[in-house]
Length: 171
Image 1 (tube, one colour):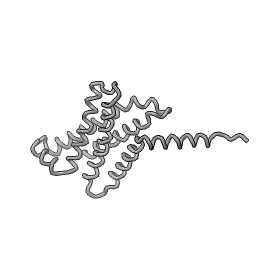
Image 2 (cartoon, rainbow, N blue to C red; image 1 turned 60 degrees about the vertical axis):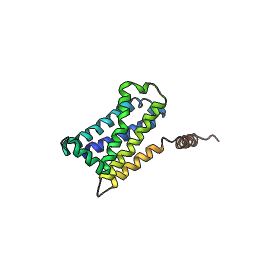
Image 3 (cartoon, rainbow, N blue to C red; image 1 turned 45 degrees about the horizontal axis):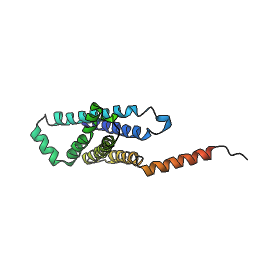
Image 4 (cartoon, rainbow, N blue to C red; image 1 turned 120 degrees about the vertical axis):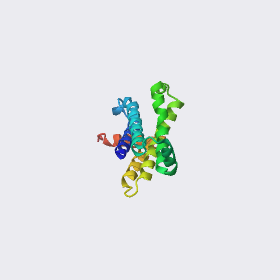
C-alpha cells in the first residue's frame, strides 16, 4: 500500500512539472491553473504515504520512527522530500503565489528538489529491480532539463525552423 501512494505521488509531481513546463505554450495556456492543484495532490499523496509509513509500519511510535529514519537512507531522503514540498503547501494556503518573484521561484525550486529526492527515495528503497525508479529518474531529469533557459531557447529555435520548413514553397 505504501508503494501505491509513492507511485501516485511520483505521477503527481511529474504532472506538476509537465504542466509548469507547458505553461508558455499557446495551446496549453489554460493549464497553469492546474499547477496549484497538482502541487496540492502531490503533497496530499506524500502526506498519505508518510501516514501509512508512520501508522501502519511503526504504530506511531516516534522513538522507533526516529531511529529508523536515521538508520535507513531511503527514509531520510523521503523525509527530506516531504519537507521540501511542505513550504509550497503553506504558501498556497496563504496566497504567496499571487505575488510572483523570489518566493515563487524558491517554491518552484523546492518542488524540483522534492521530485529529485522522491526519485532518490524510491531508488534507495527498491532492493532488486531498479528499472522503474531509474525510468522515473530519467523522466524527472528530462522534465527539469526543459526548465533550463538555454534548452527552452533551443527548442523554440527548432520549432521555428520546423514551421518555416512546413510552409509551402512558392516557385
